[in-house]
Length: 416
Image (tube, rainbow, N blue to C red; front, side, top):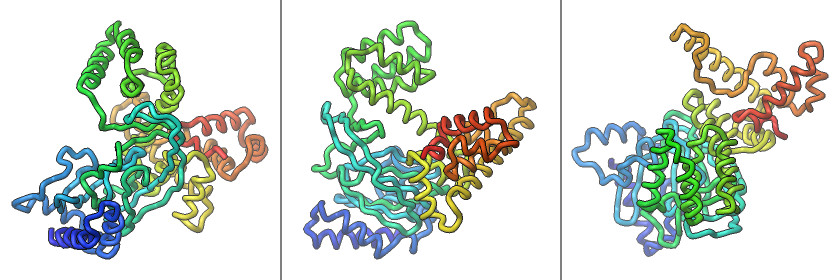
């Protein structure tokens, strides 16, 4: 594509004038993307048409589509590539990069969360523990450009709001000084997702086989493997096993059974497993939420811990109405979507007992929404009881308050 060819040559020219200094590449890429924004010159689906119509594709940097749905390389040199990434229901884990560059929002929007990590322990080059703190959250829209700094200079996650969201990424293949491209959990663990061994992969796969067959030796062999393993292998095995137990309680019991081996990992692993279950639940709900505003709410619930910071972001994104009123409107809309899904399932299956896909994990009838309205406005449980006196019993109100706060999805909205 001519535009991207010219964009790439402009970056080459400017980087050449900086003696191809890798430390300068992020700023150069970001500056050129701001000066020549792809969103102002190219329709994303022209890129799709080019893939089908060009006789010769640019050599593709990520042919297995590990990052993008799909990623399409539109320019490539020895020093860097330019990729157009389509996202439909994608989200990224909290991560840093092993390369430098910049990205540009070509279409749609995304919620970006940035973090700071303070290491407290190094198990090995592949596994760390420490404190992960949220630095900020911003809504990125069409035309926005952000630099990508190699290593811990940028620790972030992106939740894509529109279907599709499209980004243009200019990036080096890798930066030798960046170190491992760590993935992070809010529990404080950081690991290299690309560090693997053939033996570890096969052992994990055979444990999956035993679990699938409900073989009686599954737990014994898994326990023995973890007890013999180094910290990083134990981490990889135990995080994979977390998805093989039906409940968090059963997984926690298994973790206790390997004590004292890797005892200092057990607490962070329990927290990480809880975090993963909740994240997967919310990300799965996005497939049911098609409207950008509803996906925006899901992104806030995934990334922010309490009502205060959630409302701060809503005020910036939707100035005017009070955030409590905006959230209540979204909850009413989600309740209607769930009701429609339940009705469609009932009609299509002929059974009211068939399980319909639901966004919310708690019932949001009118009584629950009234309680939610009071809590969103900052009322205490006793104040909610007083405000709804005569309409709902004290026991019902308190039970609804507890249910809303205990919701895996909505809980942060009701935490001060």
